[in-house]
Image (spheres, helix red, strand yellow):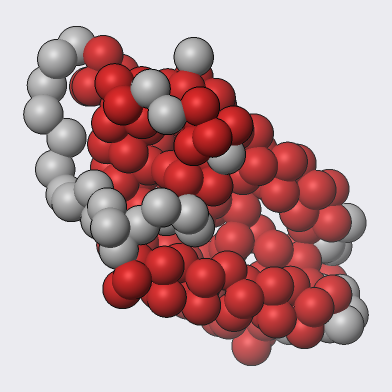
Length: 162
């Protein structure tokens, strides 16, 4: 149960963000973009796919989410099971370093969300498309690692437990 709640909770959280940002990005009128906006869009999409999707999610976050969910499913700690998505994201019951990094990233993301909401179109749509690409890559990576784990294959990375 903790395995499904941990992984499912993280995927649902990201899925909700993808859904909301896709709606905003869909308002973008691509035909009205200027040259610099097109260049920014292409560079931004590539940057977000590589940095957020591949480097952050696929190499670090996704394997840790799945590995921590597997550990939690075996540990049978009810209080952590209730907080399984937060546990899987390294926001509770983690090493000091992991807690500092995870909470810092979360606060930075919140600040960026507040800032991006103030952007007007087409800039907000362009930024949101890049974030959607990165988050979608992350969801696919989490699900791929979950399938890999269910097949008994090892998951790379550390648990970062206290």
